Length: 115
Image 1 (cartoon, helix red, strand yellow):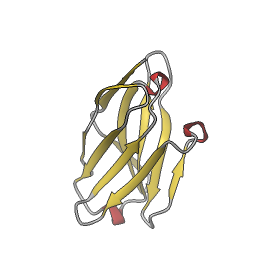
Image 2: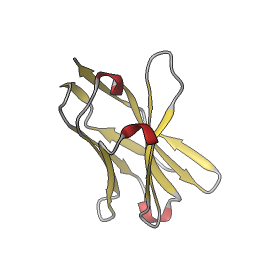
Image 3: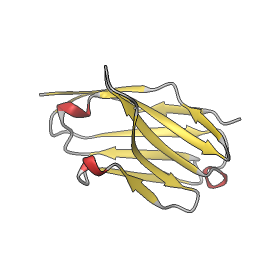
């Protein structure tokens, strides 16, 4: 079992920044990948960014380099730094972990970007 606790969402103006945190209940180095997905109303959930157990990041192409995923192994926490936010980034952001064939999800945190 893996528990994921997210924090850091909120309301920000376009062009601003937010940092999301996802604290994991076990060593993140033991997990295949930890990442962030988002879901806007009426849309499917989509991958934003993920980082593997070896520390390799990957990002959705649409982000244009505005987001950065990182991790603190000692704190078992994965971060998503979001810069130059746009109204279309508005969504519920979910932390996700994949451990072998199992998928785990956090409760989600709302990010709202006003124009």
